[in-house]
Length: 347
Image 1 (cartoon, rainbow, N blue to C red):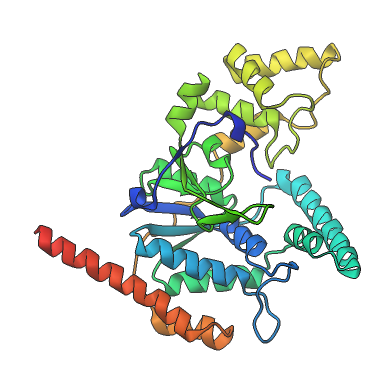
Image 2 (cartoon, one colour; image 1 turned 90 degrees about the vertical axis):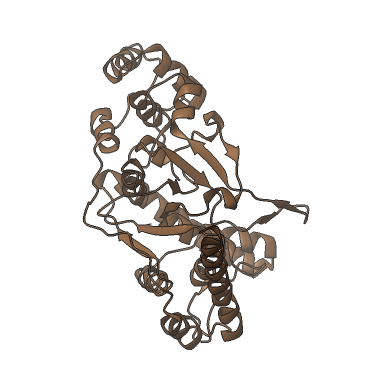
């Protein structure tokens, strides 16, 4: 679900060329769920190999990643670890929604309603441990760095960006801003075109969100941004405080300058019956964003593509077209050769 503050956040379109040569910390689970949701047949059936194993995640990961590599982007994929215990409610809710979606998918299939099948199949998707492990295997074969976070992937990405080990975080969610990431790029791993309900296509451009610009635009500081997130709801406190949307939350954090003043004021509103009592401890959630569980035990390095390992996983194991895989890899080699020749020419 993620933090829902999109309507408040200023952003600007950029080109992939603007990110050339920059290290980007990618929220791996966020990207893999995109691939699973979007890369499927019109009736909702995901891509599968001859053994009926889902390959949508591998297809998206390979072709989108190699495309970004040809543009000169240096990608580090960061994987989620164990979710914090406060996310138990969110996890349970997601599982319930998926089960409901599976039921509705089967009902739509019985009626032969293709569009409904597609809609509910996307809601019922599941990322298995096997999918995660083979995704890591593919990324390493492509010579990219893989970082295993102890808990929240976005928290780890944000830490790396704050340490200037990465230029930005790539994710569709806004949580990394609350974790203090200086830059967030959205739409990076999406297809370049999005199909509308009318059947027409619209271009999808990467969008850059800069934390400093966000804070200046909203006239708040980082601690107030975390408070805003808690009010509207995070994965640690889904739903936030009922009746308080993003705009009202912004007014409150602007009015009460510190977390203590803000939540003391909310306590008064609760006693007066103006807002329902929150079912969470704001201090605990505040600390999770201020001091998240991250690791410093990782290494960012970029190696040569292991063509044999790529083909073994994709072509031999999962029936990918060797011709298409060769073509994608060749584009990487060509882009690196051009970059090398340009460097020599500049010298």
